[in-house]
Length: 117
Length: 113
Image (spheres, rainbow over the protein chains, first blue to last red):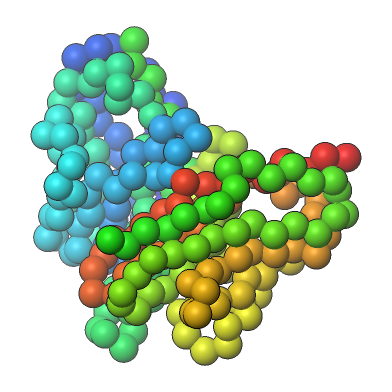
């Protein structure tokens, strides 16, 4: 089945130690998103890629970076995790075409729960 | 500013009872509306969506929602809930012309036996 895969499902890191979260998709979607979701809150968009074009949200801290080496993979890098970065990180994809075919349905992976010690 | 408001943070309900989860949106442009469900430690799963056409939208797991443009609402309903429907439900709106989906704060549905 076509899907969005996130690895690992649980990640423990130390305060200040860089960490990378991975997302892959078999849907061949051209848009990929990273969200941060803290307990009992809505997902918060960090950034998205439209094909190779990177789009950062204005309030996303510089500590968060992303890479998309190809259509299938996208990475979230946290350069110096702080205690406040402990959260669930959700990857999502969508396919966006022309104005007549835009259907902004996002397909989410299961998430990676990050714990910062 | 564009926003999505879910009017109830928690909704407790007995099994086999009907339920309505309320959602209002604010937008000055065309909007597409969604309901997603999130089970514990899982990602979000699409329940249903409204893009255009019939204002009554049917989704998976017996859920349906009605788009009301005059009241800017998109309430989610199910006539008879099951224990397995216990989860967090997010209403979301995609504003035409951008790539950003605005999520509501979520409603926790708790189904009791």
